[in-house]
Image 1 (cartoon, helix red, strand yellow):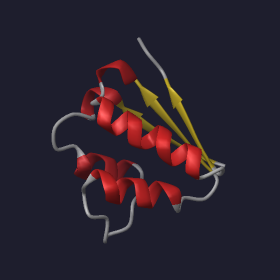
Image 2: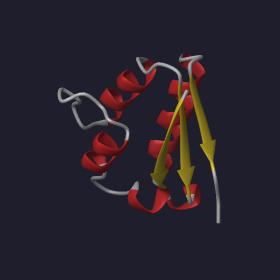
Image 3: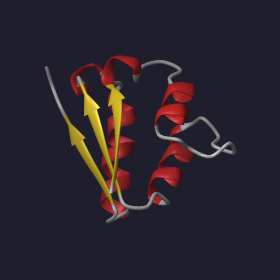
Image 4: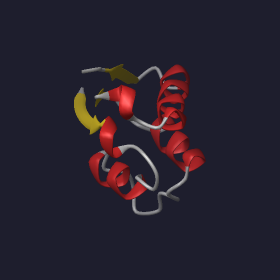
Length: 81
């Protein structure tokens, strides 16, 4: 299982370039929430840890949770300060 870390403080506004780089999403990633969901649902055995999750845009956290429900190989952990 690979583990990837996201900083919730950086998950606001137009953070898609940050998410694309950090999660190593494909070049064709459309930099919108629907595309993020699609990419997350296609991920293999992956754990994503969001540090300082309380500072992230709730829409991004919802996409992470929804994708983890759809993809049994994806685990999401939300950490707070």
